[in-house]
Image 1 (tube, rainbow, N blue to C red):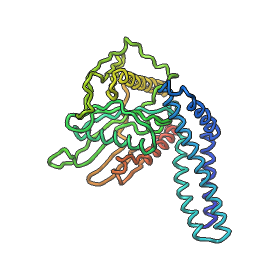
Image 2: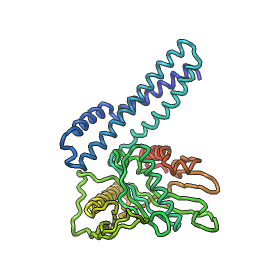
Image 3: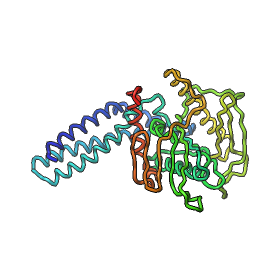
Image 4: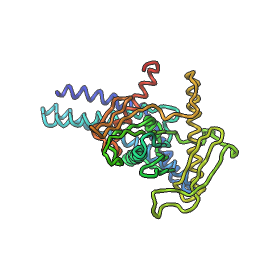
Length: 373
């Protein structure tokens, strides 16, 4: 490419980054960071641990967003200076260096641009994720455990704190279900595109004849309830049962009746939590999950009413949305966006961004053109 081509590419990237800075409102982020830093420096901050965790999590996130935007702007400015020097000196090596940097910048700016597409009512919330084994027997339970690890690794890669509330182990291997929280702003808006039915095709490690097995798992993503949501649940509408936590064995298995199961009598929704050793802590966590489910139910009903459709009160796991094929070839493919990867091992190790970003863009396109299929 010529210097003129690189100059045109620079102008395009500069305009895109300026749009991102405007939409995300960099000045507002800086004011928010200053306010959060003041709250975080309060001597009594940790008297209320829940509030302290919210403040420190938001501060970490906002600081990260500002740093990301500032670094991109600095890199783009440096690339512009290098381009001008390369042109002035007629230096092909420096010009090639500009091209390499602009290619990297294009990818980095595209990644941060995705955040501007998260404008839904609950998109800025933290997320509750539930994974449930579907059809496929022990392979489905193993697949559910693979998905749990995949999402926890994805969160770890991004530095997002997580907390596993409940894991229900299958008899032979894997999980019947698991529920965990991703405690980072915009986790819900980001991960909500992962909701749906996931399908795994592989040679079953549990089949002594080495036959190919297809199994399914469902992923449900809910926004975490906040105080402003007014999701109150009368005590007489809940049945609370306690039981002994179960696990794969070892010293960590709880030997007291501290696990909690809450049944919401009007809807039949059941949630469990056995992560903590304290029954009170487990009850509080289970109540948060129940509130999130009721909030999502309310959101679905309101959306259905707006669209003139009959609400699905029971909620849905969603349509099949992604295939993970390990045999006879290696491919992960999203059926909605056509995004694919030939490296399933990397995907299962948490390299999900390409699928998440494509899903967010796909959803935004659907919202802008609701009448198009």
